[in-house]
Image (cartoon, rainbow, N blue to C red):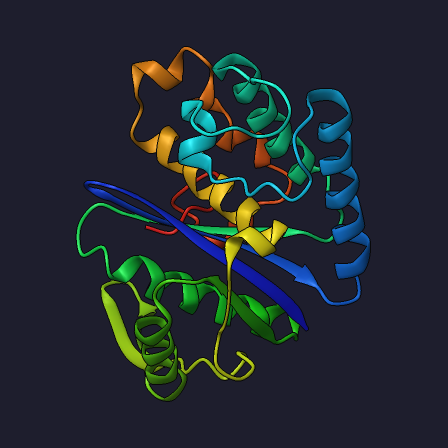
Length: 234
């Protein structure tokens, strides 16, 4: 079984989702490593261990993180360190989706891919989202749990529609305040890293934020999309 933590990043016209999947057998070890990383940031930069990381504000330099001022350059370094750190977490796997049109499909396609992957891994998933869209997301996943029509390749020029119901998902999704979940915060960081790769800004490029998503090359599920070298579902 996997615990899957999700968050999104939106900036017209891009809707992006990121999901961090952790096997339950590795969850405690991974959590301890994340806690230790946050403790190290407290030691080196004075960042409170309980301080919520929200990528948009963090990278922009907004908000006080602890007992000292941390400028944009140092924040960009920490953001990059977060990607490198995630890339080295054993057992962690990351899924992402990105849409510029029909943005509602971003979540549906991500859920479908996670379903297919859980089948391949012979596992099941408990979905854990940031708070804010409880009714909408629960309704969608319940619907997809019964009927999820997906076009399937049969032969050159021939596809057929099959029902890929989300039968690998356990119960309704769980919603957590991101301030109380390091993993939801990390999913937010991943989603923002992909956003800045897809929609670059000069103000962020000068700090190398547009390069950070590619630092996750060892943990992204590249088989999620053969059309993208980092497995981004589009």
